[in-house]
Length: 155
Image (cartoon, rainbow, N blue to C red; front, side):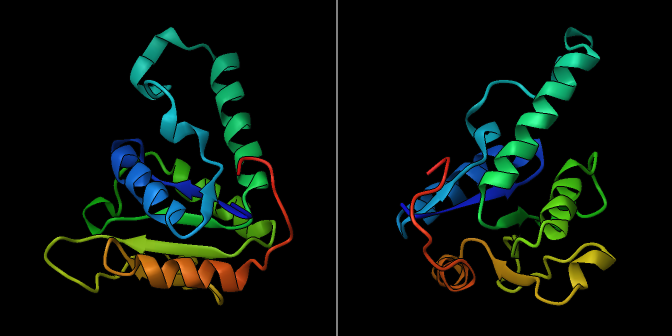
């Protein structure tokens, strides 16, 4: 695989993020998001993680974002305005680094949900797709935004 992306999502959407990762792999798009394959979340372990460990996990995610050619934010409508905001921080970092941003919404009752949940999602160049209906279109948009530059870390 020659293009790899970072998938940002809430921890409780980890299974959906893994399914999206697997669907994109069928289109030769890799994933740098190691958190999808890791064990329990830092927040779920509560006091079992100290500040140094939390910082290490955050820095690992930042490195994974940097290794990705683009960022996909899995942003289901049922989770708008809910959560800790970590995936939105990741999205902002990727945007600041000039990476293409793709928002993926999900609503089982709506084939075209609005995946945008805050004002930053309306910035120019951010593209919206629906899971799982538009995986092929998402893959094509990623390939168009990220021309092949050879193998990248995490692929």
